[in-house]
Length: 273
Image (cartoon, rainbow, N blue to C red; front, side, top):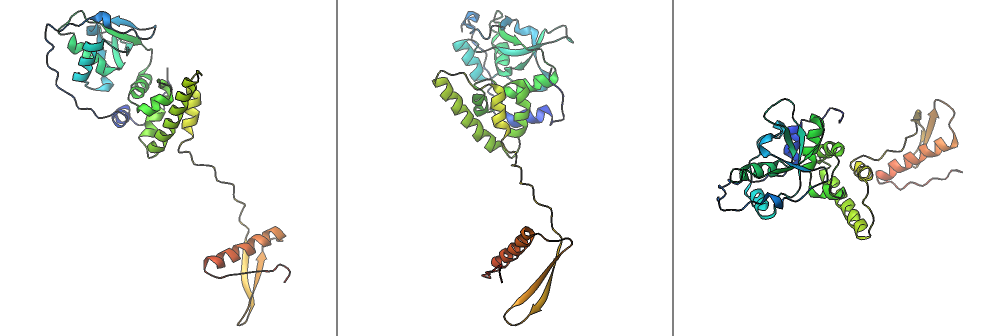
């Protein structure tokens, strides 16, 4: 279970995170077109196939029509990768609802009209609404971000990343993710395991966090008065509420010299004068 926290609505984050895609109208698949369910590519060891009619789409995802590209890919290669679902307990017509892989799910439902024996490869996740939202967001994160995690963004990181990708720091975050992704590729080329998700999040968490400013010394109350003046010189008198240390006097004089220099005056001084 993922703890609930204050954040923008899931729908708004999903709209910002996912890429806009043009939806094609699907023509009926000819009855002669072969659909071989045995060509479905096995997913993780926890994946199994179910009757697509017993699966519904998670309502928070809205309407996801089937696309021509997804249907053609399944006809050509079989289902590549499992659709993530969670159990349904409030509807006797359905056993599961799809929370990730909605486009694949929609394509399978479309193709099943011509092949009633077509099955849907699924993987079950036991998550609440927040967890389902995180999984759905992870599925639409930019490729640079998923590559930084070596292919799979943990659900508990997806919501935070989606929020930051919808903020002004998104370009910097994506640039950092690309650097991490290149490092992951280099590790893979050397036969090393990828950076673990916690380490990747640590690297991405530093993006957009302002560096801590050095602590400033407390202001020293001083009064400045002109003690004497003539055509060529001015004598100032600095007075403090407490006894002034040499360091404090030096800082005060330097501040006066710097201020004069900013106004175009070349000031020199001699502490022994």
